[in-house]
Image: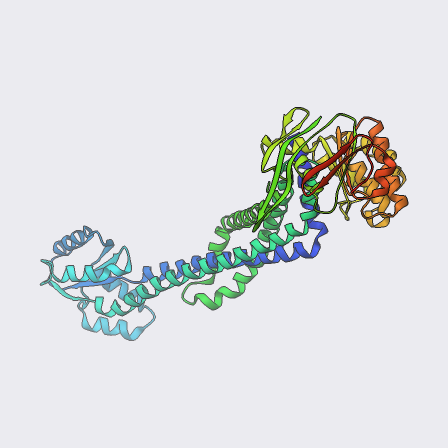
Length: 303
Length: 228
């Protein structure tokens, strides 16, 4: 009996969708727009995260030691710094390693290599590169180092040079988050309201049918189910449609907005999250369809 | 079969309107009862209370011994399947064929496809429209549309049929056709409650007449005439 109800209500929901071509088209378009806005925001936040990750990886502070500082003391410093809770990692670069790195970096610049040979000695200093867990912690770390027991062995901390970059990054980060969340909430709200109204119109178009169903003794469940299935159809079709739309959109738009990050990264991230994004869309679409149907139909089921 | 006990219905939208005032009557099985009165006398309200579209302000309404004012929302659909309803405006679905319109009533009450295939043509045969069952409502006359509505009301064999001004939109000949059909259905054992203000019909039927005026029953004659 339940099976027969499900079969009939599903067919009739699908029939509603088919027979009211224009209305279905309008509702599906509006729902697609909603999903497109929501998923664009998801993708943008994915891209923003990538940019941030990328820049964060590039930012660090380097602490340079005087040439006569014994290696053991520098290693000591490194392990002390590692104990700060703000520090994510710290890496010791010895004099020799710095020299090798420098040579490698300038391998195709004979002038520099020749001048290095001319000096004979290794002019570079040993250093410790420190990465913080979040960019806003560099200030604290730099101050702590300046006031530590090691301060006499340190020639310079190149924090000042990075300071501007780090501060900007911090500002941009908090700005994008705030603006992003506000925009997402606002657009989603508008889109949801429009979807609600669109579904209400489709149900209004069926009010006579609902009235007759009640008169001939259809249960509330039987009256509701076709509209729920109709809502599911809207949601599913919109989700599939938007997924098709989103892929080329990302292909064309991403190179223009990301800048620092390689396009491949964003695209591979998108492919990586394909099913997640699709699932979110399907859930949001179907959920919106069902909830708007239920709310819209309530007034026709009063007694 | 039906009993109204001290039923009162007040619509309170802005000013209180008394639609029914202390109404008491009994209808036995297989009776054919005409309910007459001016517009606004309370006929439609009385019918709505019977198929539980409205609830009375006070009083009890019994259907086969059960107080239908106490029905839960879950029981309502089951109650409505015991009553066939016919209206002045037919209430057919324009996008469904005659067959589908009648089948609709069976579909919502979980009848199997086989039953539907068997019952619907039978019922359409009774109202004389079996040959038009693939037509759409707009393709047939008003009288024929009302016959389809009757077929739909009859299809799950309810013990009671309520007809609210079924001839209001029809010419005299079609109207009489509809009434004859209702009389025939009554003869087969279905109780009929007919609300109308068509004087000719009431006088020709010569059955029980309940007269309502301003929400009160002012006359109840077993071989009544239309007299207001």
